[in-house]
Structure formats: C-alpha cells, structure tokens
Image (cartoon, rainbow, N blue to C red):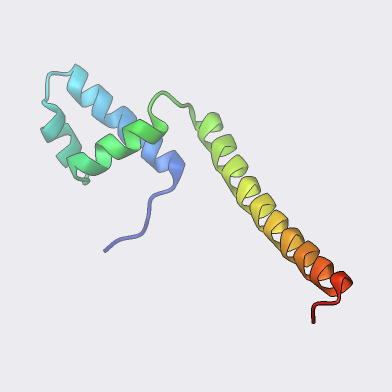
Amino acid sequence: MGRRPKPEEIVSKLRQVDVLVSQGKTVADSVRSIGVTEVTYYRWRKEYGGLKLDQVKRLKELETENLRLRKAIADLTLDKLILKEAASGNW
C-alpha cells in the first residue's frame, strides 16, 4: 500500500484523466494510466472535481480548522458538565 496523495496531486491526476478522455481514450483506460481504480477516481472526482489548486488548499485548511474547533468545543462542553456536576454537589 502506497502513501496517500496530496490534494494537489489528486487535482493534477483528475486533469490528466480529463485530457486523456478528450484525446479519445476511455475513462477506464485513462484512470488505469494514472495508477488508481475507477472507484478511487470517481470518489476523487466527487470531492475535488472542478476545484482549482488554491481552492483545494483552502478546502483542506478549512477542514483542519473545523476539526480543531470541534475538538475545542468538545473539551469545553466536558469542562462545563464537570463544573455543573461539581456545583450541584452530586459527588
């Protein structure tokens, strides 16, 4: 099993397939030439299709920030529940 490609590499591979298809190759042959399965290609196309490189970078930055904020909210919610429990004297 190889490494997971970066979003920029995925966008580049999607463009390669587009070029090959426009030159008359089938989608299956084009996908095979970039070294992934058709399932992977269609999953990538669903997530990254139509995006430019700067948009992909921004999307990944936002996903990372969203994950960080979700963790912070979970931590604060837990702290709030602990303080509420302690304040009510149920310990």
